[in-house]
Length: 237
Image (cartoon, rainbow, N blue to C red; front, side, top):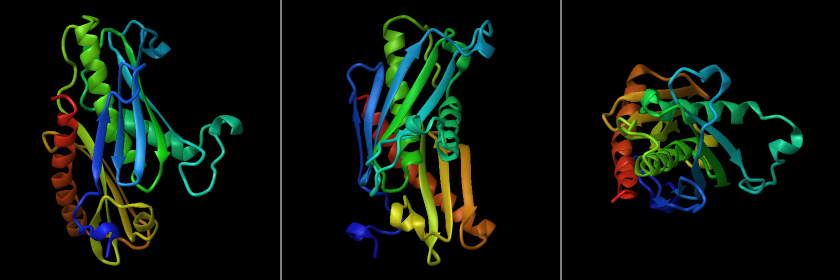
C-alpha cells in the first residue's frame, strides 16, 4: 500500500503556486506531495560568450538543494567549492528540457536563467523542477512580451516531467523517496503538450527491463503529463 492510499498509477497531490517570488520576472512554488521546489526566471542581456553575435537567446538552469531539504543536513556546494556531478547533470537536464520548446531565435539575444531551489526533497525533485520551471519560464516570457522586449512568443508548447518505476514488479507513477530507493527500475519522462518526448532517463537499478515494460511506463507517464500540463495552464487563467 502506498502512502495516503495512493493508487499505483496516481500522481501525488500536485500544487503549483504562481508568482511565488515577487522580485523575479517569473516564478512559482511547485509541490509534488512532500517535495517542494521554488522556481524563478531571471532575464539578462549578457549572453554566454559563444552565443554573442548569433542573434539567438539562451535558456539555462541552475539547481540546488537547501541544507535541510533532506533528513540530514547537506553541505552547501558553495562551501565545498565545486558543483557535484548530480547537480550538474540535473541542471543540464532542466535546461535541455525547457529549451526543447523554445525558439531561441525569438529571444532577442536575451539570457533567461531558471533557478530551481529544493525546499523539501521526497523524491522527484528533478521532475518537479522541470514542471515548475516551465511555469516560471512562461511567466517570464509573458513579462518580456508585455514590456515589448521581444515581439513574438518563442514557446511552442508546454513541457512537463514525471517519474515512473517498477517496484516489486509493480509499475508505480511519481515515486517518492522511499519508493525510488527501493525501485527495481527507475525512469524519468520529459513530455511535451503534443505528447512528444523531450527526454527519457531510464535505469535498471536492480534488474533489467523489457521493451514492453518501458512502453507501459511511457503510457502511464503520458497520462500523467496531461494532468501536469493542465495544472501548469491553470497558472495563467
